[in-house]
Length: 400
Image (cartoon, rainbow, N blue to C red; front, side, top):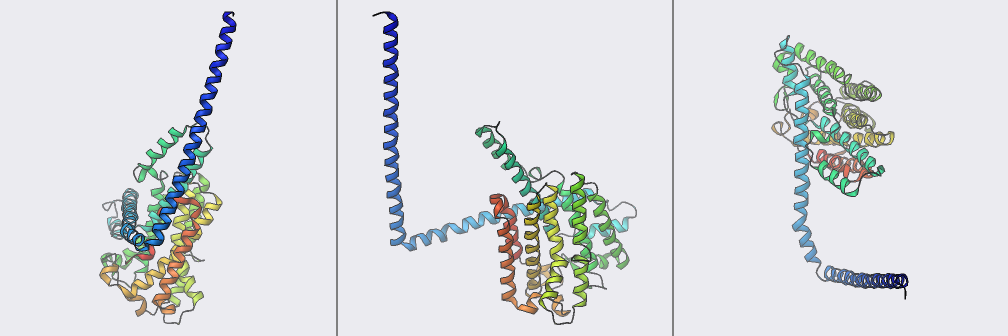
């Protein structure tokens, strides 16, 4: 036999042995899978037996571990609220004229009200909406990319999860949030004036007109409003988005279905028996409109699609109305110290409120239903919407 024949025969036998080895491996793996399948079924049957035989055991486990899950969610939300408030305050500090800037009296009055505390809910909602939309866009971009390996994508995801609060937001969105807080503060300054609600306390401090006089308080509110649009006009985003954000916020504070229109109807409804249509118009316009605009503006800034904006608007309108319903309830159930403002003012002025029309229990039920509706609107975003959903529940469960 020539060396060539011996070589070919040896090669064929080697390939046969290789094929036989592979077949043996597949057979072994199939047997292993069958064994694992049997083990899984046995485990499921065991779990089913234990569940039926010892239901109290599972209930005990649920009672034991559920609080830890709730505690974790609560601590995460607390962190978001703290970091969001800090980010908003840093932006406000940069955007407002210093207290020493001439004429100093107006700038001191502006800062007195802006930095009196507060939850910074509108900036936080704006920033979190922007974060959710940006995260969705980043995930979509990664999914469409065919050049990144699974390991690189995993590493990117891991590193992004460790980003500090401000670094994980769309750059510059904190300025949108700060502008919204200035606008909200302007509305509070004017709302507290003797001609409107005539309140002496706001966020636990003397109201602006009590500290600086009515004339300076009016001008401080005006100055905050004009500064808002100066800030919005300089946002670092596409011109179309910038114009749309300005339009959105201006409409939310205007006279047609906006904050000022809601305030007018609220004044005219005092000392009258409210009806549902009037009550909803007041709350949706006076309070919910700016909250919805905060969420929508964050979505626009982050480059959200038309569908994103529709969902964010429904979410914002729902939590905005729920927020005001809860506010109506708290006005009757909490003290001035707890609220940071004079309690019982709505009842004293015979204002149109949900408790006045529906009572406490039905009011709370309606607020809860609105929160559920808001959360359902964000289901499409999966885990990316977790913070906005927690914020919605927080607004309904708050005590101040």
